[in-house]
Amino acid sequence: MATHLRNFSSEQKQPLKNAEKTKVAIITANWHQEITQALTDGAFQKLLEHGILSDNIIQIEVPGAFELPQACKMVLSHKNVHAVICLGCVIKGETNHDEYINHAVAQGLTNLSMASGKPIIFGVLTTLTHEQAMERSSGKLGNKGEECAVAAVNMLILQQELTKTETKIGFS
Image (cartoon, rainbow, N blue to C red; front, side, top):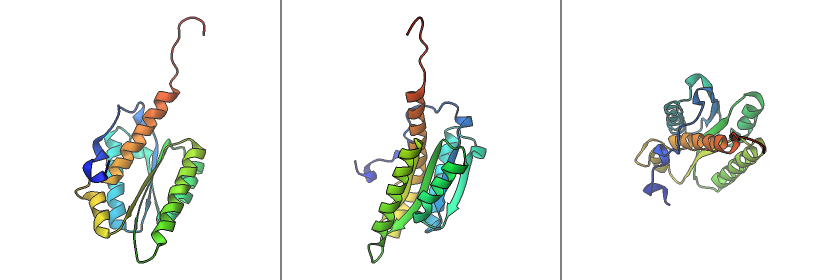
């Protein structure tokens, strides 16, 4: 379904258990800071709405989107977090530079997610124009930072559902 037909910012399966003990890192690329700050603000606020305490939300800034996978790896190695949200913005220019950056970031974050077993959310806007990025960070298309926070919460809920132990009576 096309993004313009659906705003994912308000979608959630069910409440996150032990939200007050959940730790989430938000890593934000500073390139296109007006846009990425709006994404960060949206993600932070949405995590609070889902019961995650502000003291348990770690915020880290990196120079650009290309640095997101390395920073994510550092966070996973040095911080005890349950999920990581990586936010950035890459706008198409006169060359194919954006394609190389976007592919490298997506692949890096995918690899880290699979290796760590923790939800790592790809929140990098990959737009053709500055106007498109603005629409996706605080405009008529919602705030993709909020959607990333909802995705992180939903993945944590899924993880809880899959790892819960069932109480049995009698012998197994």
